[in-house]
Length: 218
Ligand SMILES: N[C@@H](CCC(=O)N[C@@H](CS)C(=O)NCC(=O)O)C(=O)O
Image (cartoon, rainbow, N blue to C red; front, side, top):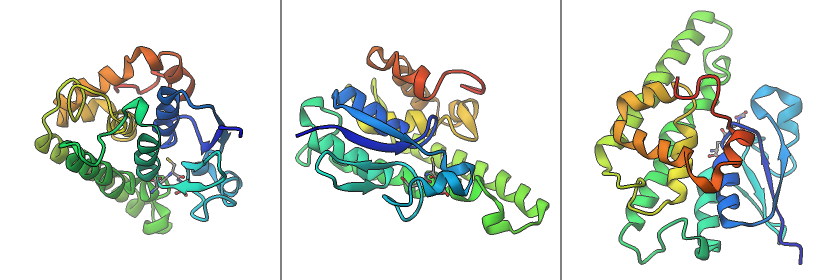
């Protein structure tokens, strides 16, 4: 059977940690590029696999579709235990792993549905839109600060070994309000994400899928 995964995604998006995980696993995958925050035509590229018309979506070699970034990452770690990308159910780190893997999409990632198009909640009023942009950025920074206060990173967020949580945080921390703010509010997690940026196994991956340029760390 062809063991190739299909990822619906885009450079710089929430599909990047999924693609990074597949790269570390060494599983073959192809990407259907859909820049869903750039309008209806791009969103419609995903409609057949995800009625929310969002990325990431993963189609498995068996033909099953998974959506929701955290579920995809946890599932990939479970399906490929040889890659050791997540604590198994009997591991003492499992509780905190599930806690933070859930916190990121619930508290942080969900803000971007509003931020990317503030008119969704603010209507056509430019002042309302500016307020939404400013307040969601503040809320995201506040959530990173709360996570920082509850976590004691080692070399990686949950201990000496990398997990998909590290990949998820390394990518999400580069979105608004960007790394400069992230380092201010979460300095210990900041050291970890720089370590993830520098992983030898992903040296060729990052420049292709989320290059360290523009407002990287800015
Ligand atoms: N809950 C979803 C959120 C996914 C999401 O918001 N994806 C963004 C791209 S990074 C998107 O597709 N935005 C377009 C839209 O929401 O209309 C997940 O965790 O996978």
